[in-house]
Every structure is written in C-alpha cells, then in structure tokens.
Image 1: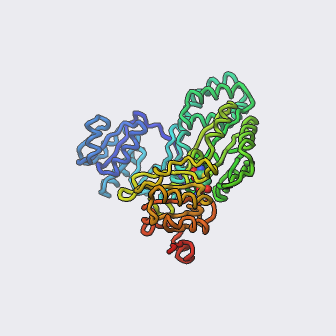
Image 2: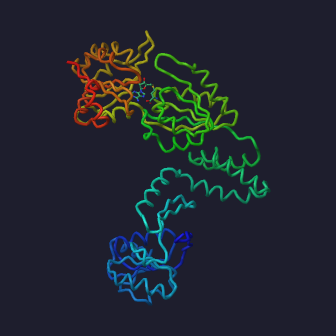
Image 3: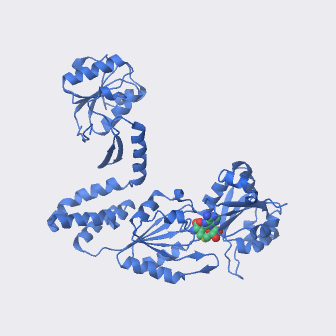
Length: 469
Ligand code: SAH
C-alpha cells in the first residue's frame, strides 16, 4: 500500500492554497466544504476567488509565495502554473513537516486527494495512488450510480438512534442484526421516500419487535432495454425477497433481479390473463404478510394501462405499506428508439395515449377529439382493433394519408418498425406481433431522418421497415 487513506478533520484548521487560478479554486472549494480556514497566496485571483474574498470566506495574501507563509499551516496545496513556485512550496513544506500536495505532480506530494463519492456522513474515497486517475474516476462514477442518494440521511438518522438503541438492546450482536435489518428494509425505504418521522418510528418499532413488516414496491420495468431501468428500480430489485412479474418484462431486465429472490410469473398477455388479477392481488398480499420484501414488476410504467392502481388499492385495504417506482412507458421508450418525437412544434402540439383493448360494444372513446390533426395518437394494445381504429379515425375526419407507424418490441434488440398510412393501418397490423404500439400522426415522418436505433439490422433486413404503396 503506497498511501494510507485517512479522513482528516480540517474544521477551522489553517490550510494554505498557493495559486489563484481555476484549479486552485477547485481545491479551495473542497477545503471550504470540509470547514477549513483557507488562506490563498497569489498575486492575481480568478473571479470566484474574488467573490469568496468579498464574502469573507477566505483570506487573501496578494503576494508571491514565501516559505514563511507556511508558518502555523496544517496542510498546503500548490496549484500555480509555475514549476519553480510549486517546487519551492513542496520543499519548504517538507522542511516544516507540513502536509503538501502539488496538483498533478504525484512526485511532489506528501498526500494525495482521492476521488470522492459524497453521501455525507458516508464518504467513499477512491484512489489509484496517482497511477490511473481516469480509472479512479470511472470507478467513482459506478459507485455514484449504485449508492442511493438517501444513504447519508439514513446514516444521520441512525446516528441519532444509536444511544437509544444501546439502552434497550444490550447485546452487541443483537444490535448488529438490528442495523442489518434496518438498513436493508423498510427503514431504508422510508428514508428514500423522504418520510423521516415514519423512518424514526420504524426504528423504534423494529427495536421492539422481532417480526419484520413486509412491504411492496410497484416498479415500472420500462419497455425492454434494461439500461432504461431507473437506479431506484435496480436497487429494489437487488434487495427483493420475491418478484412477481408480467410477460412484458424483458429477460434482460429479469437478469438483474437478485439471484436468490423467488421469481413468480403472473403473466399477462393482451387478450388473456394466465393468472387472474384477483389471484395476483392475493399473492402480493400473502407474500407481504409473510414479512417479505415484494417487488411487483410491470412492463413500462405501472400506472399507464398497467392496473397498478388497482393492485395498490388492495394493498391499501390490507394495510400493507407500498411505494411506486415509475418506469419509461412504451409510448415514450418505443417512439424515442424509433426516432418519432411525440410532439414537435410544426407537426404535433399534443400527444394522446389510449388503449385499443376496448370492450366489444362499449367503445367510449371520443373519436372526434382523437381524430384531430396536428396531434399524435399512441395506441397501446391496438393491433387486434386496428380495423376499428382506422375506420373511426377516418370517419371522424383524420386524413387517409396521415402517416402511421407500428413499433414492435420497442427498445429491444429485435425492435421492428412498420410504416404506412392511416388508410392501410389494418393491413399493416397484420404483419405485426404483440407487444406493439400504433402511432398515428405527422411526427411519424420525422423518423426518416431521426431513426437511429437498430439501423444496421434494418438495412440488412429490408423487410423490417415496410412501406406499403
Ligand atoms: N404499463 C405498460 C403498458 C401495458 S399495456 C407501459 O407503460 O408501457 C401493454 C401494451 O403496451 C402492449 O400491448 C403494447 O401495446 C405496449 N407495449 C409495452 N411494451 C412495449 C414495447 N416494448 N414495444 C411496443 N409496445 C409495447
């Protein structure tokens, strides 16, 4: 180990920055964040430095560096553009046993500054010992994505509860188990949801009982491409005890579920339900009542034609706590990947999402509104009713030459886009398979220019893009 990682308490300690440029400012800002008493030596200061001086946040000595500036200093950073000055700072600091860092010159450092993931009071420091700073930065980016934002708040609340817990739970190992349960369970969820008071109450409840309370996360898995999952969805999928999912959820997404989690398919396909909705509702309730962390994973967004609301009402009635994680709905994901903007200043001032899964004789859609020009109409589950949709739109005044697209398995590697005109929609739909979206509107034409996903594949397989004459 070339360096010992330590976390220094700089509060009110005199720290010296030599240099008044942008790099020096970045270092100064970091020192100020840690509460240091910063003195800057530089004949000229950049704009931010000048502001900080005016606001009395730092002390400025408008002079060239001299070794005596290091008197009484705890730590020094040299960030000037002049090698000779930096060398003098390094040499003088060493003579005085003052910790010193010359920016971008590991040879002239008695300490180096790591990359930081700041979830204060949790701080993760990463260093490549000066060997590969870019690699350290990439690791940092990965950690930034994995570590939830509420980690810091969670640690702060836990810190407040520590003494109280020690009074009631006396054994060390019982306390350790308590915290493992809290950080991995409902306490963490409540903090993430911004419900601090409830989170503190959860700690109290947890310290008084040994049977954990179950909880449910209703999560939108997006249209298929796993990289479109939210970070929140991924975190909860990794913590789940049991995952109930639909057919629509892609294999790629299911691969990211915690390996040990029980996986239950309550598949729904347009046209038939393999597990009746009531049974699904009951299953979710039962698992939660067993104290499990249940993830209910749905394609797209759970509140868009997904019956997510109905499932939550059942949980509400059963008194089971829940949270909702939105997902990218198919209309947003599939059109983005097909290069069809839902709105456009010249072609569509509004967009409407409807379901084509209409009850046979009770179509209550307002077709005259849906058939208006200069708007985009997106139809979920519309393949089987494409003839009816085509007929109604034409009857209510939409032009027969209005561009339409059918996007099959949007965002997935096998995405297929069929294009044509409204008067041939039914014919087009015969070449498409579920899951697919129908898009009606002038914006469809933009995909000629804006199409970007799966281009090579589609050029190779001419049949993937069909333009009917
Ligand atoms: N909650 C989902 C919609 C469920 S309804 C969401 O927000 O996206 C199921 C319908 O959604 C399918 O019949 C199809 O019309 C559409 N759909 C879902 N995923 C799709 C995808 N990857 N590509 C195209 N259409 C999709």
